[in-house]
Length: 151
Image 1 (cartoon, rainbow, N blue to C red):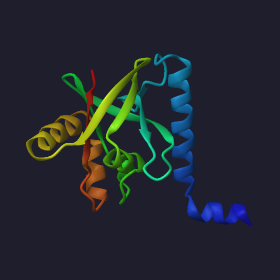
Image 2 (tube, helix red, strand yellow; image 1 turned 30 degrees about the vertical axis):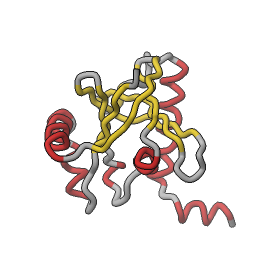
Image 3 (cartoon, rainbow, N blue to C red; image 1 turned 180 degrees about the horizontal axis):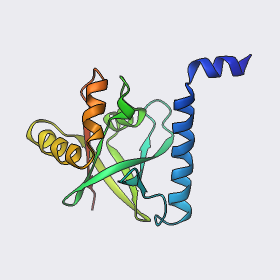
Image 4 (cartoon, one colour; image 1 turned 135 degrees about the vertical axis):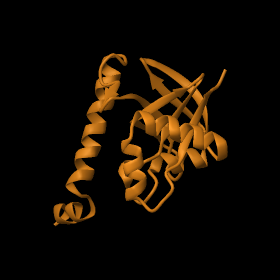
């Protein structure tokens, strides 16, 4: 009976995405960032946050871009109508870390707004036009989170 409830709550697509992300993160870690760091033509890092409700560490492989010394992530959440959990974790606690090319970097996150958002959205959507399709599919405004290295 539990399996029936599980399948009703999670779609096959959601389950496949979770497994893909799990194995991608494992590949990045095992290879020291040499493998798994590119997916669908995008660079991938591992984002480490603290769960806003649980207080537990969370990690997720996710596509990113560079902006000078900063990194940024388009919080598209595969065009879903709700933000990803990691987005809420960062809004609650902007202290995070990134695993990039086998190195762990401490960062502070903020949400891009105004001119910064417009500039980064243009940059990201020109390099990965799928973000434009995602924005058309969802009713929410897709945010961009910026990560500034600490120290």
